[in-house]
Length: 140
Image 1 (tube, rainbow, N blue to C red):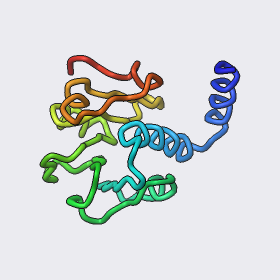
Image 2: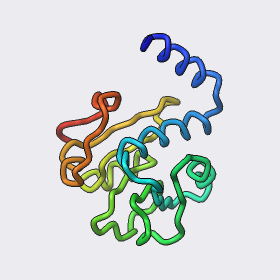
Image 3: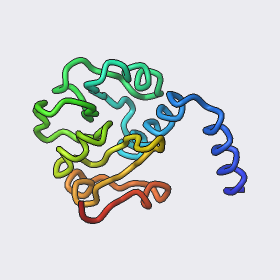
């Protein structure tokens, strides 16, 4: 049954647009990081990607990063992250902030890359479901 579900999901993702793929990936990530939250407040610094997050159930995009549960950074290097959960939406931000990020999602050579940083997940008391454990890196 699990194999059939995996095959169907893969088929849907193959025929989905890149935006749909990205939305599904972020839906999975956000639901894994915040499994018990009714509404997840997201601040994203990339206005082109707002629509992706606005169309995810339980997610509300906020204008002020101080109101956010999670900051998703694409090109901002000087945003105050304080004690917020930070997630990279691009490789350059991932490299710059990796000591502060719980993880990152970025495209490289036309393929999606998903990485979670074990130490930072632990610092934020985040426990990922088994389906995402393979994306956790011990030392970054």
